[in-house]
Length: 264
Image (tube, rainbow, N blue to C red; front, side, top):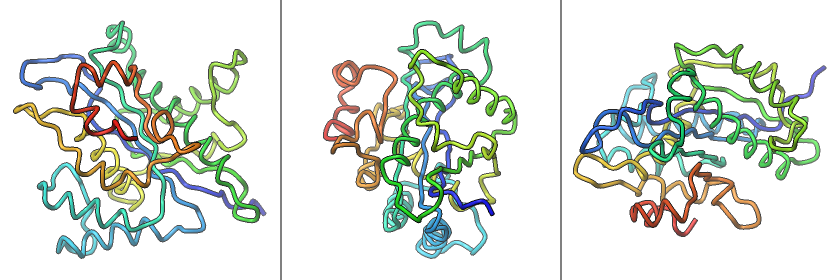
């Protein structure tokens, strides 16, 4: 009999992959991010309880899926505060798209940016698994459940991850014993509470980075979840939160990024 995995990572995105940047933050989002909410598999009811508690706190009917983006600010604060009562870890990889050197490379290759962020996310998720495995608690692996993107082929995603596993130059830093590529699956957001937690995490991080049309960001949600971000040797930056651009450079150009994540 196959032993159960040690962890489950639920993965969702925030922002879009476009490069059409218009004035006042309109057009494509400047930021695109991918987040994972990681639970011990033995604590399988934690995401279900988190979302059930959110529904109760917000007075929603029992089956209603939570879409963080559709909530008003004060309800989002409740949402993150209630979810934060559960035990889980988060990993977020964020790209400030105006910094990307060859945007046409990404525009011409559908899902390329998503795939690259997935690779960086899996590195960190696999390290978390390696660092936190307990004897007798699962097989030392992590199940990966993506929020289903209608237009994307997950067979292609599995092939891409297998290809990464064949790179022998040391550039890919995934801890491979933790990853079962064949088990990667995509499920609709509404069908799994864990994916709704991942949506809350991804959107919380996005709103701390994304400026609204008035030029303000909202770091409160990500601050509530800060204690959940994966840490390695006390550092969250580079682990629970990874930027594609140089963080010092981002801070110097965008004070709100430093204000939100400077203490991470």
